[in-house]
Length: 275
Image 1 (cartoon, one colour):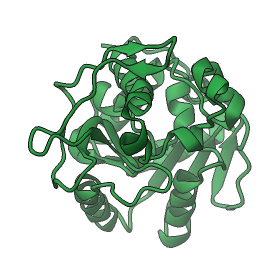
Image 2: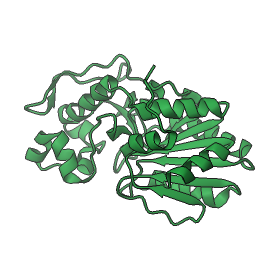
Image 3: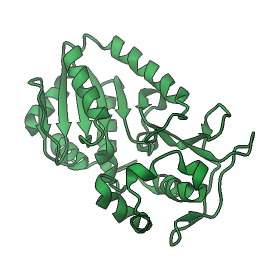
Image 4: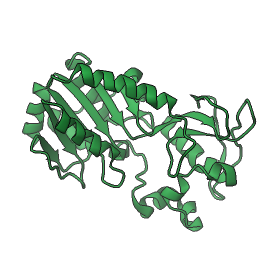
């Protein structure tokens, strides 16, 4: 399967990288799959009896903003401090070899691809990004979270400071699509989607290698996208990389039961030092 994946990539004219939560886990980021995964990362949430899907809900910014920003503030600082693993550098070398003919479609909100040096104009973040914020009230607009610093009491699981909208003084929230979320401003993601659709149109008749990394079945947005491309495009092949949910139905594809970082090292038979 390793050699087969290598052949698919070598023959490709274009690279579509699709990435789920498993891509970030190899950088040391928490895995929120299942209550236990979330509770390992946030023991205080266990004490409160709150699951990830309950915590990742915009209603907290109204009912308990200190709790909301304890969770999202901690994640914001964690993602800022995390360095992308060497698999990102391997992919960087790959897309350089393909004349930068690539696009990235990810459900991750961590900004790791941008931090690793990939072109911001070639990334679509389908669930938004924690590095951008919006008003939880009625003010429109999305802005960088660069200025936001949130002090947190992790024992009490409370934010000691709450970012407020500079226009109306309502609580700010991350520009992330949450569960039960009807107030997410998706303008930024919509613009990314338009660039993505343009790239797909330009590469419709080319050989596309879809490299799917760490996309599970719990929230199957990324898996479905890769499968859609393989069905719709005449010469697209899916390489599904996941240590658990690695099954693949398409005959035009190959699966690898490994973590993202390990699989990329195996395919390219090298370890890359981050620059």
